[in-house]
Image 1 (cartoon, rainbow, N blue to C red):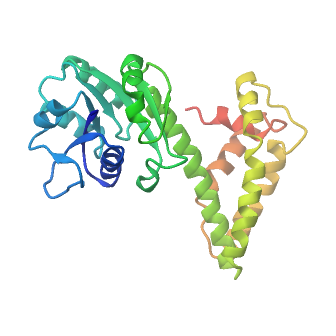
Image 2: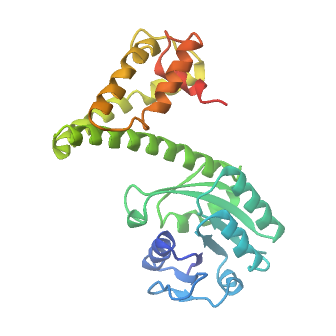
Image 3: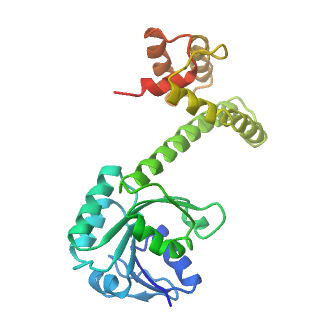
Length: 280
């Protein structure tokens, strides 16, 4: 029977361990604070015991400082693959990878693109990077959790793409919530508005591949919805929001970037030019 260890039993850690148990894997778990259990899993008394129980060790804790703390208690990682599914930055992932190597183990970093409730279900995705050999060796086990997509041998690659995807998500949610606030403040029904907004955003997202081509080529000139035109429209959002008793915090950053782009002489360019305005 294939074995796996899960260190960290927060909401996500319990979901990961539960998925392994349900798939018939011999699962060992350890958590810093006592009292958290996963039905069907064996609880180790220490980090070292948990690491010793399986050649594949999955860590999902609060942050990468906590991961480093776990490693201080792990002892030798000789013959072990450590898969770190803790959210963090590319630099942090590389730091953890270096520490794992010092302890004799192989390292795979991961970014979970799913909430705990959809782990092991359709649509769940985990991005991985680091040791290709280690990833391929354990890919069948990792596929129990979600689609497993390898992003490259740079240990920081998974964290980079994880944060890039989440940046897109949070930006989208910010716009959605401002739109909801406008409709609600005007007395409209947000439930009736939601399908209209969903369809509109889906239509706008269809242009994402074309925008990516513009970024790569550096050719931003457009005859449709140029930056100067968008700059003229921007004050309307803030005036209407103020009339409704709403703040403009969500929209202010993109307004400011548009202003800077136009001032820099890019008024005839498409909105995609804003990618260049994000640079420090």
